Length: 91
Image 1 (cartoon, rainbow, N blue to C red):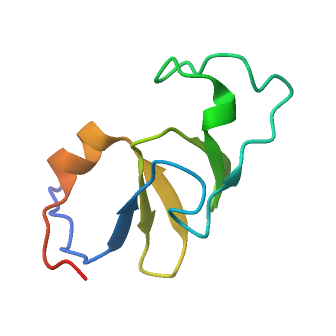
Image 2: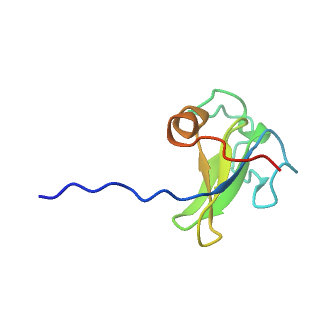
């Protein structure tokens, strides 16, 4: 077994709070928009969804939307984002 270090990669990210905060996030289209989210316990109607390389993911208010090195998007929970990324520059 060998050990590896992840190469530093600069990504763009936007914290998502509501529709319009990021163009990749569209309104949540589930069967029961009044159901509570299992992650943040707010109604799913207050959520969005984002296409990723693995399929559609639900976006909770406060999640970060990261644009990867090939232009792909994926949501990231705030606590994981804070542990993984540091601000390089703000536009």
